[in-house]
Length: 135
Image (tube, rainbow, N blue to C red; front, side):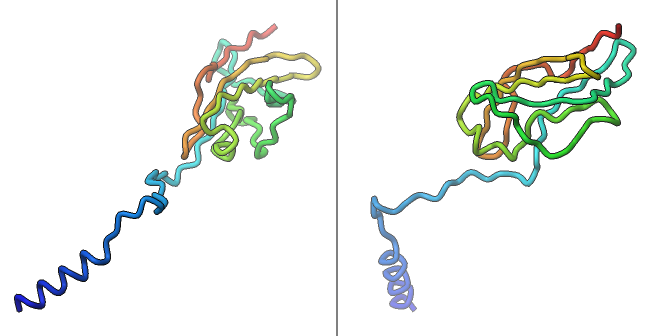
């Protein structure tokens, strides 16, 4: 029995190696949550602002960011970015500008700064709630 134990231990030790060329596996474990970064627009009485049009522009490239079609019509929340951009934003600071119109009038123009980890896009700077004045 003692010989079997020694033999098993030898096989186990022979299977181990300390090769410096072996690539380490990334140990980051992400959850399955899909985060959305949005802004809530409302009037002073608390009712949501319903924009007729809005766009998101990457201020560094001038590109219009195409997002999933989420309009915020029901509750005044407007999608700015989401985890679908985590690879683009990873370890960078990306400035996006949110521009919203009611008819021909721009009622909101707000800049945001985002970054991303291996798992999620997150807000560095910007207002998540904006009060719009009714005229």
